[in-house]
Image 1: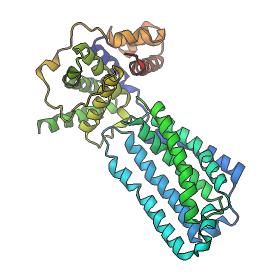
Image 2 (image 1 turned 45 degrees about the vertical axis):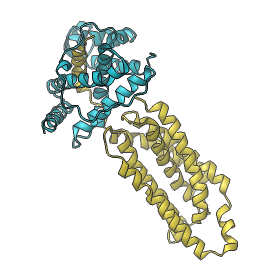
Image 3 (image 1 turned 90 degrees about the vertical axis):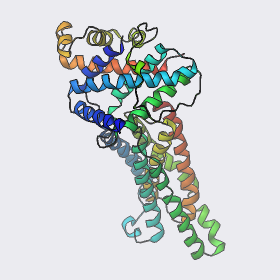
Image 4 (image 1 turned 120 degrees about the vertical axis):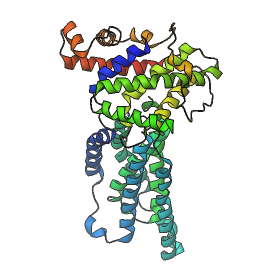
Length: 212
Length: 185
């Protein structure tokens, strides 16, 4: 087949418009989030007096942090799958999250007596947290990766990692409304570990699934 | 400045193509081909690869441009998107042949004179992948690509609906891109 012939076939296929990336992403997220929320309701469930807790600074802090991470990593993901798009700034912006967390830890250390530090750090639910966040993030991760196959990431593993980060943030946001451990110390250790795990999973899956 | 004008024209044609104007789209791909070809030859020559290998890369890049065209934002500049796709496909081709070479693709607005000519003898091209497609897809792609049939012609010839022809064509092209990607050296 000559190149000109191939072009003729491509032009004939022009009317079959691929779904826009944003739309593919949104469409895949609906079942992804629905499954995560279903698992949340089935296995975890919200803490009692959830709305009232929003006035509790530590609780509000961890929930907001998870939402912020989700928003920033979603922005990064969408850039990473567009060839030639500027993604460095979106990646650097992610640093806001650990910076805020560090500030939260500083405040916590100043306001909690030394004797209680390790108790705050280990909490009551560490292993539960390690298991639950990846469990909640798995369906969103699959949905995100599936929709990103429409895109063209220059570095599939990195795009997969960003997808994992987003899925981890979604899992963390849900889990945060269940877990009674609100200390930034707890969040910094266990949430970070759990999110790192699903980020690595995203990178491995992305390297395979997002090649084009 | 000339490069900028050129990229603006490409973007214009691409937008028209996205709006369903097949003629503009075809013109765009025809305009891009010599640019991609010159670029592929320049990139592959240091690896000791022939012009026919370069033509492989050109065809693979055209397929990628087509199948990934939704990854270009209509408001974004066209050049960086095109260069990123061309670079990705070139690296892919070199890697498949077991070579790691850094490729300078910063500017390819200057088309080399010899970039216009397609090599006569194509040792390797879409053709060999075409053979491995499922029969339905193969006949449709062949009819439209090689025989120059329109969607409507193909539909009449194989007594299919135009919708079914479109689906077979699109699947065939996606499968071709996949074959390129998974090919062993």
